[in-house]
Length: 349
Length: 130
Image (tube, each protein chain N blue to C red):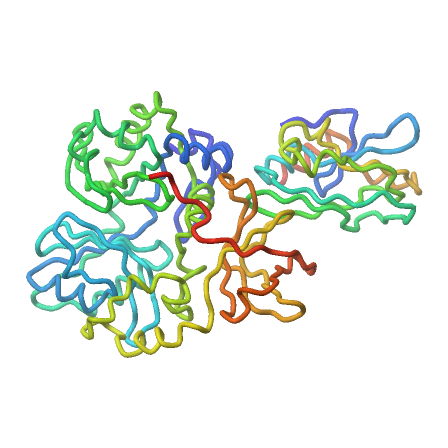
């Protein structure tokens, strides 16, 4: 399918995925101005169901699943018993006793093994990743594309989720995404994915929808300063350093790793995720952040940001260094950087 | 993908054109620009009497996806650089054999020409890569 569309494919976390169809910049700009479709079926899906499902979610995740209404979704973090972050996830409450957790591809197996330990007689934990595809439709025209196909799904509120049908294909639709734009994500059975892709593609054609790959997905989420696990998040990075401390509800001592997370919050002043702008080069992951000759941090993600028309990077920097003159070492040479407010890009409301 | 017959090529995916005045013009090949994808930054060397030596890195091309060194294809002096390019790096994707030229060199050792590939040989080299 994607190969037929001229996609350049790459092996990603064991999945054969499209990186780019035409040009990362063109795909990126199309998502910002019209809409793009992403096959993100590599993402993992774990279902937690049963009378004890809510309790499992409350223990396993850092946000507050108890405040999550049926038909709503919540960004959350998955900590281990030492308060280290194993993954960042979206928890969808699809029923009173049923939750679907969308996890990162690279962590999917590990997350499932970790979550399985929470299973009780009252809560089953099931890995749905192998049977489930995920297609994202993102951009300001997403709702207009979806409306004639599924009016009720197109009317979903931000972070709402509902089961429905698109051209006879059963989907779980959510108004979520990873691009900084309005949009939807559709979970469906693998066998239905090509049909759903074709349907959305045809309906979106008059609106200028494009097929977009993982390359554009990365530049879009970078501009929106959405963290990517393994870059801005990891076991050695606290939620407060990564600016996602808001997703840790410390009024819930029942959460896994509570004491360590509480301690990590107090210590949050150590490092901070900052936005850096460069003019003549791209600061890429792993490049050192310098203050004079001293290394004060490291770039976690960086690229050219098409909507900004400049290179920008996210970097974990020592908190006491942030206000001073900062540079990035680009292959042995020091390039001055400018601290930029985050997110780099914010869509017009 | 196009590899014009009147150019010579290196295995580092650069092209070289021998000019009537004895200088050479160089740039990157269609294969290189396609593999890099959207090119967003170009750093060129400065014009200088200081000689540069074949195979040493002397320019950088950066795309959204990757950063890539450009190597000196023929030893010599840099007599001219394409000053327009850093301001419009997308020209490298659009016209890599024309307006996307990088540097003009005055060769110091014409015997090095022998090591360059013909269009046909470069095509064979590319075929082996994929």
